[in-house]
Image 1 (cartoon, one colour):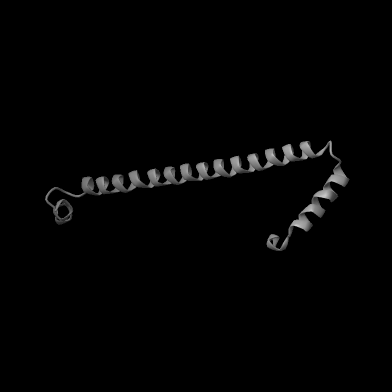
Image 2 (cartoon, rainbow, N blue to C red):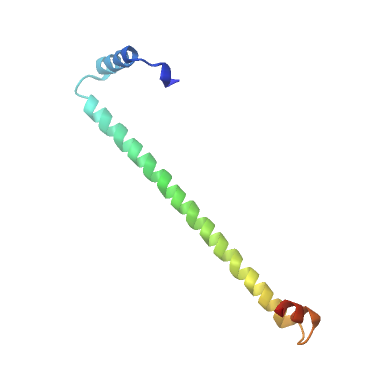
Amino acid sequence: MFGSLGFTELILILMIVLIIFGAGKLPQLGEGLGKAIKGFKKSVHEADAIEAEAQAAAQQATSPQAVTSTQNASLTQPAGSPAQSAQQS
């Protein structure tokens, strides 16, 4: 899409922006655009960190349950039962 924009097209766009906003407003526009991009990158990074923490918490939540269920199963089996001897080997 932007690959077809040449040097003349970019100069034309910049001149139109300069006419519309004036020379005094261009630094403010650039600053606002920079802050917007910085804020967007920060929010994307924070969202990735929150998602990674949620996945880690989900893995930790499921792991102890599996250990607890195998411990409960060994506790409920009578001593010397075939299920317990198979579990120990």
